[in-house]
Amino acid sequence: MTGGEWKNSLLLSICTIATFAICVILIRESRLSGNSTTMNSNNSNNNSNLKQKKGKGDNRPNIVVMFADNLGYNDIAIFGAPSAKTPNIDRIGMEGMKLNNWNSAASLCSASRAALMTGKYPVRTGIYPGVLKPDAVYGLSPDEHTLAEYLKKEGYATSIVGKWHLGQHEPYLPTNQGFDEWLGIPYHMSGGSLDEHICGYDVNRTMWLPLYQDAEIVEQPVQLQDLAQRYGRAATKFIETNVKEETPFFLYLPFSHVHQMCAPAFGSEQGTCQWASTAFSTDSPHGTFIDAVEEMDWVAGEVLKALDDNGVADDTLVIFTSDNGPWVAEMQCSGSKGPFEGRWLQENVDMECTACPHDYIAEPLPDRKRRCVNHATGLELDGVHCGADTGLGGVWEANLRMPALARWPGRIPKGTETMAMISTLDVVPTVLSVVGAEDIPHSDLDGVDVTNVLLTGNEPNENDRVLYFWRDGFENGPLPAPFGRFDVAAIKVGRIKGWFWTKSAHYNPDVEVHHDPPLLFDVIADPAEAFPLDPNEYEDVIYRMKSLVEDHKAHIHKSPPLTVDRDPKFIPCANEHTSCRVSRPIE
Image (cartoon, rainbow, N blue to C red):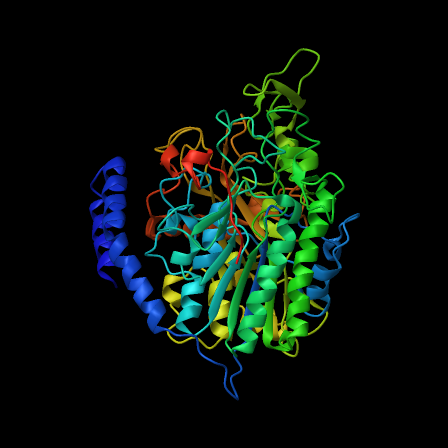
C-alpha cells in the first residue's frame, strides 16, 4: 500500500465517525496534496518500465478494446439492427464470439468507463453521482490503477483514441493514467459548441468542444467533418509503429459515437442532434443516427484493416462493447431498446409523467400532455412517457445488456455465442490473465476472469455469478438534488434479477418505488421485464438477494463522490485571448 493509499484508508476509517461533508473535504484535500507525489511516482515507474520487444515464443497478445457511447443492444447488424450496416463490427463476432449476456457495470458514462479501466464498481472509485461535467473539479483519482497502467508494467505500449470522460484537466487526463498517447475529446459530444452547432447553454460562446492530443488542446472547436478519419489514422499509426518496433500494444478505442450533441441554441433539436463526417453525411457535421453508427463501424474497420495489413490480427484480442444503452428521451437522436422494453415500469408509472430530453423541462398543456420546454432557447418539443424511459441513466435491461463481441483468431472459437453473464468489470482481470500478468490484484477487483468462457465457450454455473447495480436519482439522501443518494437499485443472481428500487431513467419526475420483497424477473426468459415472478416460489432466492445486498453495502469500500464539485475555471480553454479557439497541426 502506498503512502497516499494508507492515508486515504485512515481517513476513510475516520469517516465512520465524522460527518459526510467533513469526510469528503478531508479525502479530497489528501488526494490533491498527494497528487504531485503520486504523479511523479507514476511517471518514474513509466520511465523505468520501458516497452519490451516481443521475442520468439512470446505469446502475449496485443489488446484492442472498442467502447461505443450509448449504443443499444440491437443498434448493430449482428445483434439485429434493422437498418444500420455494420460489416466491420459484425466481423469481430463472426470471426470470434458473440457475448449475448454482457452487462454494463454502471448506469452512466463516466462511471461505466471507470469500471472498465479499473475493474471496480464506481462506488469504490468515487465516479458518481451523474457524470463528470466539462467544469468538473475532479476526475478518476491518480491513486487508482487503470488497465493501461497494468499493461505498461507488462511492457505494453498504450494509446487511447476517442472519448475519455474521466477528468478533463491535470492530473486526470489519460496521459497521467497510464496512456502513452491520446487523441480525442475529454467528455461527451454534448459538452460543448461547434461553429455549426451552438449549445443553448453556451451564452458567452466560449464553451467550444475541444480536441486533445496528449495533454494539449490542438483544436477548439473540434472539426467533426473529418474527426472519424483522424481517429482512424491515429489508431492505424499506433499499430504500425509498435508492430515495427516489435512491441506489444494496448489500443483503447472509446468511440465518440453515438452520443448526441447538445441541445442547440437555434434550429431543430431532433434534426441536428447526431453527427458524422462528410464521408457519411451530406449535412456534416450533422447526420442521422444511422450515419453515426455506420461511421463508427468504419473506424472499427480501419483498426481491423491495420491489424490485417501489419500481420498481427491472429496475435490480437479484440473486444467490442458499449458503455451504456440508448438515451430514450432523446428519441430519434438515440438508438433502440430492442427486446428490453422495461414493460413493468410502463404499466406502473403515472401516465401523466413525461421524460424530456436533456436541458428540457416538462410543462404540459391541456392539449399537449408531453410538452417539453428549453428555457435557455425557447424551443419546444414533445417528450415520452416516463415509463418508456428505461435506457441510459437507469438499471433496466435496456441500459444493462450491451452488444458485445470478442475475437482472438485461433484461441476464441470462431462463430460461437455464449449466454454466460459477463460484466464490463471483467475486462481488467480477463485481459491481465490472457497477457500472463504477474500479481493480478484479484482481491482488489470486483470483476472476474472470464478467459475460460472466451477460449472454451464453457459457461459457469449461472447461479454463481452475482452483479450489483447502483444508481442515483433518489428523492432523498445526502447528495444534492437531483441525485439524492447512490444506492443499489437491483441485483442479479444468475438469470434472476431482483429490484429493490424501481424508477425510470435519469432524473425524471417519477419517484422511486421500494420493493420488499424485491420485484423479481427472469431476464433471460423475460428480457422485457414484463412478468414478475411469484415471490412465494422464490423465497430462497429472495433471502439470498437480501443477504448479498446487505453484506455488499456494509463491506464495500465506498469512496466519496468526485463528480459533484464544479468550477468554471476548469472548463477546457486553449487560449482565453482568442475566446478559447485554436487550431494546431496534429502530429
